[in-house]
Amino acid sequence: MSRPYGTLTRNSTITRLNHWLTAACFILLMLSGLSMFDPLLYWLSNLFGGGQWTRAAHPWIGCVLLVSYTGLIIQFWRDNLWTRDDVAWMKAIDKVLENKEEGVPEVARFNAGQKFVFWSMTLLVPVLFFTGLVIWEYYFGSYTSIPTQRAALLIHSLAAIAAIIIWIVHVYAAIWVRGSMRAMTQGWVTPGWAWRHHRKWFRSLATTGSTGPRPSVNGRLHK
Image 1 (cartoon, helix red, strand yellow):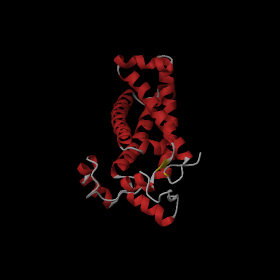
Image 2 (image 1 turned 45 degrees about the horizontal axis):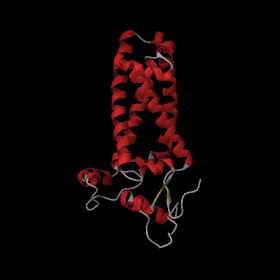
Image 3 (image 1 turned 30 degrees about the horizontal axis):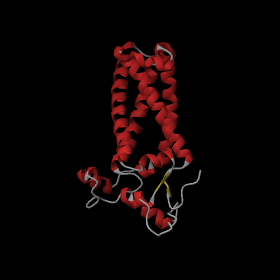
Image 4 (image 1 turned 180 degrees about the horizontal axis):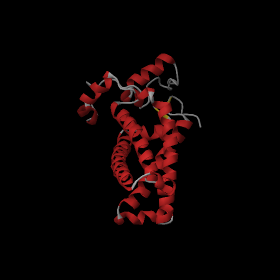
């Protein structure tokens, strides 16, 4: 599906599929994990066909998540490297939250908040995966001691809570910044959106000509 005239390609089809596969795995893991975390949430296991099916499916979904998120790391690690502009952007976070552009550094493809989410999940996903292997009793239960499994379960639970909090912030920010969801569902943004939220990225597109804006009928930037 081609983008509308006068817009910019923000995410390719492969990137969007990779993102939504990761998101789907994370949501399934969150629901199944919560059902095993506390008896009050056990009813969530009905979404997976009961407790046994939940325990069986949860680790396999985790394997898919690791592979899927690795795909995102390969695609975006360079764009998420920390720079001085990110430090300045964080110092101006009060203006960012108030939607004030004056005094806020120009942002490249990702802002400091997005980079924080990226690197946090880059750390947490492997932690969840490897601690999950330790407590995956069916395959690895005989290779580790009970104290080791208990320690792994504690770390796994704490990492999961941190990941859920970061995911909530990520979803809220995507909804709060108008046009961001469209970038990941349809793949395109308007030049006006890019100029306002990711001006340095917009300038790089204009310089290189890569997926640059096609002129609109009236020659103005679409917002």
